[in-house]
Length: 473
View 1 (cartoon, one colour):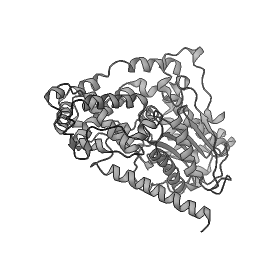
View 2 (cartoon, rainbow, N blue to C red):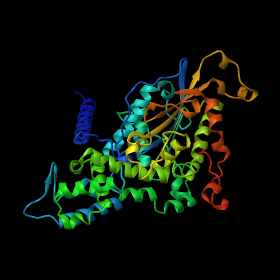
View 3 (cartoon, one colour):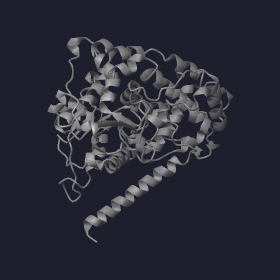
View 4 (cartoon, one colour):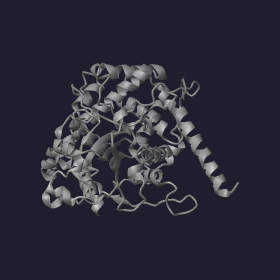
């Protein structure tokens, strides 16, 4: 056995053990996907119904970074909470509830990580998404890597660029020229500094949005005082046997921190899920809804500005379509960003909108809501716009004189939308899984027509020069 083969076998076994560890961790609770935007990545592993007589030729994606460690502020809150709880425990009789033993300490890997750093699970998620995408759309992804064929753009956060690298490795593994593994390096372009990024991190570069969001979220605040949250707090107090004097001071923020300890435990390398055993499934659903309420009003349908300010991103996606129609390149554009990027994009497209808005007083009515971020935008959540070139009699005739200057006629093109690797019905297509590109563009033409980011965000023109398409730089 040569060294290359031996190294491959060792790497495979390590990867297998890592995935097994996290699978076992996730299975320690009845449903591992109940943490709103702190949920680990999951997808529906089902075939994609592709339009007949068509082949995929271009893919334009927006991808949230993969699973990560908690930020430094979150870790500090965990420490404060544990200090408070541990002071109320008897040293002679430590509390034990299922697999949770107190006093408890924060796992070493969390303490040693940089704030919001990607975990091994996160890089594995990105790598696997790239591999599966390649297997599903080989006609669009068969071309060798060049900056003209494929474009990778990330925000200025390290977890975004690291996600891009892991994803690219899944696409181009073994097709490069470096080393025995034929590694393919790729260029990761930046979408700009956070406070100026009106493309992939608009929520940091929109003063009007930041000012309005700084105000208390009324529905969120009301739900924290409602009967559902009070029951969760009572359940936690009973299970930890913290005593009446302590229980009277138990606040919803503590329940949230425990909830997040569970969520991040699943994502991080230690795979410590002991805090998950503190919650029954109904407790998790209540805390999941609490976070969804915040995201609904801060990032989605709760306010028009939430999705209107994302019009630059939509413009950029359509620019990638235009460039492909004109020159046959790029074959793929992959953007790596955040929750606050993906949720507004889906909202702008009219996706996952419920008849009733999410409110503090209608928790029971929202049990089967469409706006369930655990399923829609988990860690690694992604949206893919797939363009197909189709063969039919009508597409053989160019639709107008402008098309004669293009490599592809727009009348030949069909578009399909994937969310977390599954085809979804589109409002632009009358609820169907695909339709003509021109129909899609016509349906959303108002987005580009009304994309005055200075007016939307209250920015002065001198401080908000219109950005160029990042793929063209």
